[in-house]
Image (cartoon, rainbow, N blue to C red):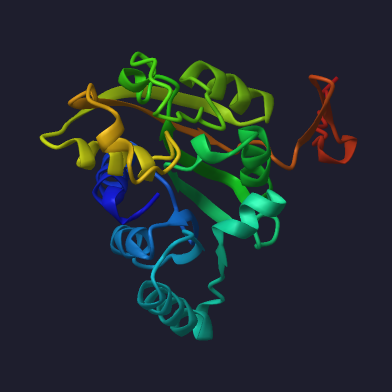
Amino acid sequence: MTQSIRWLQDEIADRMLQKLDIVKLDVRDILVTPDYPGNHQAILAKRFPHARIHSVIEDGSSRLQLWVVKVRASWQSIFRGVKTSSIAQLYASNKFDIPDNSVDLVFSNLLLQDLTDPKLFLRECWRVLREGGLVVFSYLGPDTGKELRAMQCGALQLKNLRSPWDMHDLGDALVAERFSDPVMDMEYLTLDYKEPKLLLGDVEALKLANANSHLEAEISNLPQKLTLEVVYGHAWVLGKHLSKSQDSVAYIDVNQIGLKTRTDSH
């Protein structure tokens, strides 16, 4: 997402944090993915002042923005072991550059719609989260930009979201990846536009259509509003070290079973 939609990233992050108000969580380490760019790190540092914050930095950040994030992370890492990586690395490998069982909270804002297979992302979250950890996320659902699809205009080269999953799909995926107590909800946001070029700028920033500098002149019936379906969710990592899952069957390691003895009196 580009600078023109930065306000949306900040607004959704605020709403995600509001939803965390009722959650009790002891946080030592946080993974922010993606960080837009460094803004979320600052917000979470205020909310969790004693936590180390590891960042996956958004592509397209300016040199100054990246420098500020790197300086902040490098300064912290001298004493606290903070790590940073790029979103391009995540797209290429579907892996986070941090060890197993190393964070208590994964905070992911408006990312999943850009991933080919969100299950791989959830699998990585499970890997890096500690026992009792929490993944919190938001993403754009399949109804996003429905006004554009209704136009049936060849000049506007629409792109499908890489992951057009609704909240029920994601909820099922969380359960399949062994997360506990998933909570999903959704809301529609409507953006109104006075000028077509503003709408087209956001459409491009949201990756809903290919860039076309002449598009405004070619299309006369552009809508004056754009609907965003924003899906929110969170789920816990519980019993991580007690069981392993294979073919939908849970197997408990015999070494993890505690034995209780009883002495009968006669």
